Image 1: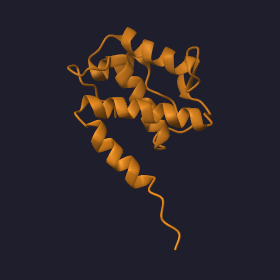
Image 2: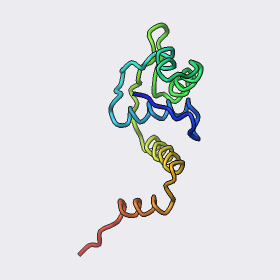
Image 3: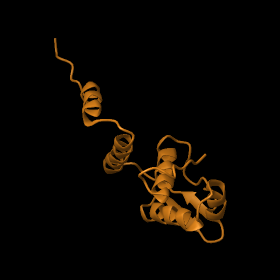
Length: 120
């Protein structure tokens, strides 16, 4: 379910965080779904448990997950608002930029999406 790029520009904890947020956005993870334990996810990805813990802590601080002692981490009931949507767009744009997508390419798409039709 989770993949990381050890040679990417984003830190590993940020990659985990971004993937969880993306899974929430597209409905793969729903409110009250249980996330893998820190130990389980760190073993699956072959990374330090502290890295997973850092991602989970940041997600909890931001209100996307809640952690129950000795039970695990769970997806919160997050109500998406305009600010959350803009944050997600910005985060995604940074990823696209890292992959080589240019500002002009993005602007063409933005113009296409927001193109106003003339009234006849």
